[in-house]
Length: 468
Ligand SMILES: Cc1ncc(COP(=O)(O)O)c(C=O)c1O
Image (cartoon, rainbow, N blue to C red):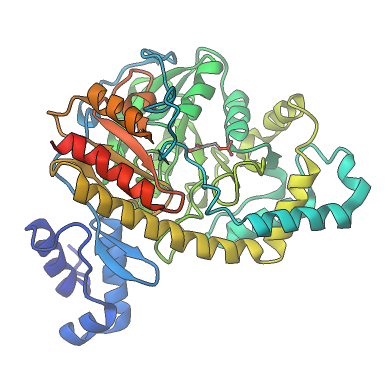
């Protein structure tokens, strides 16, 4: 087996984490300290930390340093025991989207996966929209091409090239957000009754698109640390004719899991071998906390079987209804479906995003936004570790918006949600993340807004109830 130079220090850190000497949230030695201690180069230390981050044990917080990432008390609920079955895309449990949707009190909303009002670059967005309206005038009142503005597409292609994702202009469609892109992609590949594979857990809105299209599903386990279960998926491909896979390889919602490059490569090889199309949802890809933007499945594919979708709902604001689909070899069908939904996406949004991408404002905004999210993620983990029962399982993600929390077996979850309702705290319950109503002991917490004192107190009270 190959031995890397960095193992002289990474093996020490791994041992200390696994033996509990370094606890979750513990700040690890700086690159400079390790360089001196192990008499090695900065490059070696940095490669070592990249390796530790890829294993999920360590996270980097920009401008702060490296930290121990996760609390690993036991495997996540149900993920190891999912049966390989084909099921109808219908919800077994009535889905109530938040823990306290009926409650009037709104003190601490951790349930909606969108940037909060205090974190959105309001000035930048509103100023840009006004400028775009002034500069483009009446042209914004006409239809734009069905596949989208050529200039905007060129800018999206340029940005994607910075993370090794080559998109051809002839396969790119501008859409009204990522969910619409998903709808178009699935409708272009499948017809009602076809079998697709989907992650479990998976965000409700994605499951809803699958339900509306009348597809059948095989649920593939995803774990916060090991990610999408490629082995399970491979077995499913060998047993069933799967038309498509829907997956979020970068900062999965809700687990935050990130597939390593090697896993991405392996997955692409499997889908090519079995002729399965993949729709990869890269909506969170730009929101990485480490220095390197993760690559896409598409960056390993030449066959046209990988379709990528994304949008600016998470990176700019959810009201900017603009996303895209690189449809690979399904472009023609996809373009027709897009046309049936209205001949063009709003020119105002197209020009706004085009302006932000071409002026570098997007890149600048994303840098600051990532730092804020990383800080929030770390702070949320600290609050959960402080106030929730010791056996609560949480894993710090390396990007995105969400932490997936698994409560200990002895907690009465109905009682917990009732208490949350009373104190005005909203989480999204775990059972909304699958058709079969699994993940009863889990909930999703979104950290994409600033923390006011009342919000911190609310988490403390929710945790205190569970710990009593
Ligand atoms: C994984 C994922 N995909 C898609 C969406 C929706 O994206 P959009 O608003 O661009 O349609 C969300 C929002 O929650 C999401 O988490």
